[in-house]
Length: 111
Image 1 (tube, rainbow, N blue to C red):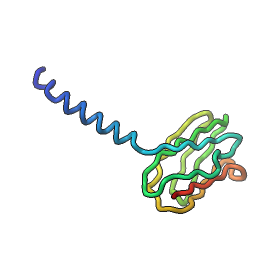
Image 2 (image 1 turned 180 degrees about the horizontal axis):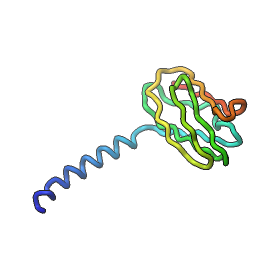
Image 3 (image 1 turned 120 degrees about the vertical axis):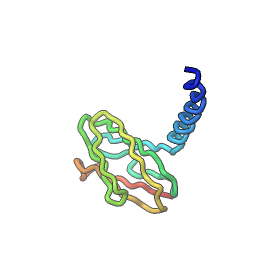
Image 4 (image 1 turned 180 degrees about the vertical axis):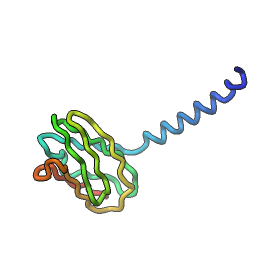
């Protein structure tokens, strides 16, 4: 028992470092409401991996899709999904909702 306890500080330190590293990515919120993305234009930093928290406030599912970002993710109604993006070069990256393409459109502006 004593021998296994001597590794406890090491495991605790590794857990802390892992948790800190996982939480250091900037998070941006994108809301789906009335089959539209809000905001329709979202600015994120260039050269940095970010988390995009997509909050679908509609009762129906929507699919976040972007050919330029190589992302495709269904977000069920009344749920939130985290999508990791980047690092990206500066530029504009369009995205849309596959299930409501006529209204669910947006743009990531990377600066």
